[in-house]
Image (cartoon, rainbow, N blue to C red; front, side, top):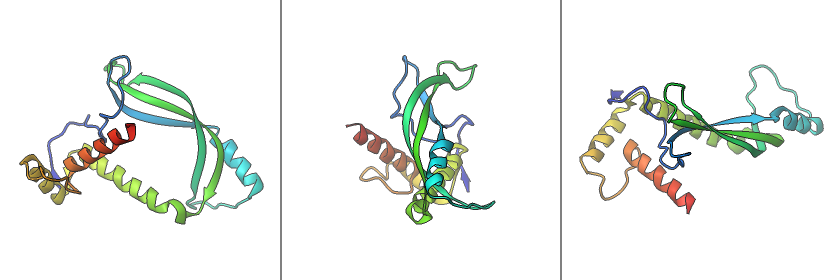
Length: 163
């Protein structure tokens, strides 16, 4: 893998679509889910299932956002915030892997890629695409697999979702 310059504080995602809070930048979001066990226990109450150590199960939860808070990333940088969401789980169910495994795998790959990029690690193809992008070679169209084009596409999609 090629290594590009970055700082350990590099974000894993483009956060430009996050709103500021009281004039301070929000650089991360988190989720805490409460009552998840209750909803799933109710589901298993009408559809008992037996799980074994090492089983992999896929869970879908219907949740309500019950709290939103903005807290500093750390005590030494009070002007940079994390938006914390608390979700209260309602109805839950165990679903077949066929329904969601592809989306879960795709998300795992996206998380892995974002972590590598945050560390400044790029595959040779990604590094070459980024170099081409910075040289203006992607001016006519976004190139899939180019980290900078992918960031631009994600930002455009976020803007489109807002409208």
